[in-house]
Amino acid sequence: MTTSIGGRRALALPVIFVLTFAVLIGTSIRAGAREYAAMVMDARTGEVLYSRNADTRLHPASLTKMMTLYIAFEAVEHGEIGLDTKVKISRKAANEVPSKLGLRAGQTIEFRYLIRAAAVKSANDAATAIGEAVSGNEAAFARRMNRTAKELGMTRTTFKNMNGLTEAGHLSTARDMSILGRHLFYDYPQYYNLFSRRSTDAKLRTVYNTNRKFLAAYEGADGIKTGYTNAAGSNLVASAHRGNTRIITTVFGASSSAARNAKVAELMDMGFQRAPRQVAERKPQLPTYAGNGTSTGAKTIQVARAVTSSMRPLGRPTMPAVAEVKQAALQSGIEAAVALATDEAAVVAEVAAAPAIPKTVIGDAVTKAVLLTAGATSPLPQARPRRLDFAAAKPLAEPSGEQVVVSRVSTSGGRHWGINVGSYPSRYKAERVLLKTALSEMSTLDGALRKVAQRSTGFDANFLGLSEDQAALACRRLEARGAECSTFGPNGS
Image (tube, rainbow, N blue to C red; front, side, top):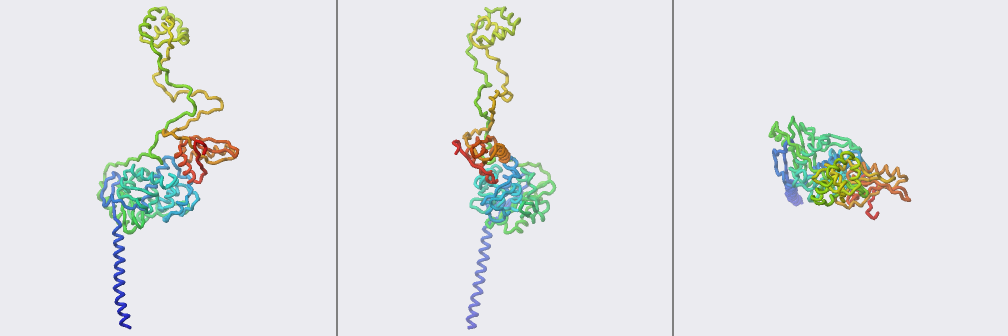
């Protein structure tokens, strides 16, 4: 029996050893399957000082939030949304997996706190809320991310979401993320300090920087963004400056945050050694701003009433034969010229009342004399002004009680839609809501006509003169901030 038990133990030990070895080998294979990539860039010029697999498309993880924040800064700077705009949190944003701020569906929070939480805490719920507040939904914001990436020169990046959670096709490269990091520093320096904060107030609580260990350990480090998922490994885009030199280093696919920080520090040192001390700074070019559209779009100004007069001169009437004019002038002789000189006012009045002919090469005085003596039948046109100044033209007086309404009309046409932002017990309250809404949602309601419609149920606050897409986008953005909104078409539906 003892021998038998000993035999079983002797057999079990090799089996355990083999199984353990297989697990270790499998882990090694899985770790090896995650590709490592890196780039070191001189931020002053964009010159690449070192690269390895820099154009390999890999999972960026939360480095994605660099683009989310870039667009958030862009939207604030162009008046699409304010830092103090209150954003209503959607169920989608609230249900994002950690890391997160802890937002709840239905609550409202100022836009600035979402930016802080995404930049410092790398909060997934805050990043999703940012995208929804700016573009209405994830798909629309992802399209804007990809369009902006192309404008920045990120040629091998595709975004599918705002936070970087693993998704098929959501990929970037070490080169592209280095380019984005450089643009963040140069394009929005007023917000760049966010990335160096060890902690910050995010309203719900104080949050701590996911990159605080590297910021504390490496001299001159002041950003930018960490990222980690199982598929991506540990990623970091870091920036540091010493004297006049600034280096950006990007690492994808490190096995841990400690290994990542050590590798980034090593590459940073290499960058500072290789970068020239004195070099002409070449700032990157700002991308073309297009907001949530595909282009800036031309707009024209249209007066919302029928045109009753034209600043353009009337066409010249048919000129009589030159021979006839000369003959009439000879017949008039000097008498008409004398009459013109002695009683110019009378002549001018008679010319204005009589049918006249155009001016000819004979000269103004002789031509007016012809009018008096030859009984010409064509009216004399007024002299054409050298320059038509439409802006200086005085508008015609409007009938009492009517207003001249000026609205912007897109060249794309189809602006027959509107939105309703509530019904109120008085006209005053409806007008106040319209004004407040117009100021808070300038990007989508710019040029829309504010109108209060009185109904049996109260006073409806409406915006008119929108396209169907503009109306839908305006409502999505307003509802994201907890405001009441509904769209209606040309027939009021």
